[in-house]
Image 1 (cartoon, rainbow, N blue to C red):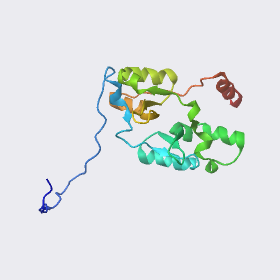
Image 2: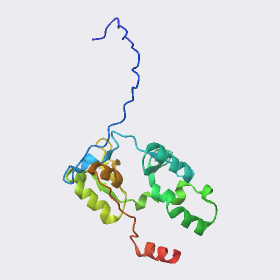
Image 3: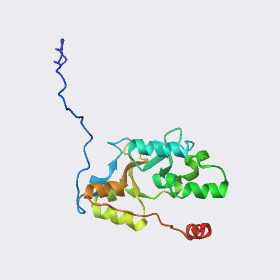
Image 4: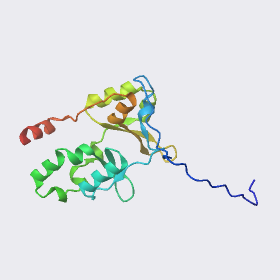
Length: 198
């Protein structure tokens, strides 16, 4: 029932030495905890995004500002066209692109170093719901990646949507131990390209 009159609340002075509320720290987990407990759920946390034409340096700044290491790359209609990670912006991809195409680092755009959608491997939400944290760690270590995206089927549209993201560094914080993976070449073409560049 809507009231006809609302009484104002009373103000008081802020206490000396007061702090401010911080977002909840990561919930501690064990290897046998449900995997969903270490997934960044995009139904609760807004996705960090960028576009392909953004300068690489700006994408890095967005990652720092959002305290993330992965941005979804979207087009004008907000459809995912790829992703870019901190490793892509600050690793050897910019150097390789400059060696192959010329130019300066300041000229590089997200599109020059991003992973395009056709090259993105994802996990299924139905599998994640049956998995434990240890399964996710083993999965990320097995493929040598820092992140994994999780997809679900939208009940209304029937379309596939990115529901969440796993980050090995976040999982490590929640487990209370540092976890490291490394990107590894997955195809002979990638291995040959690395050998030629060496």
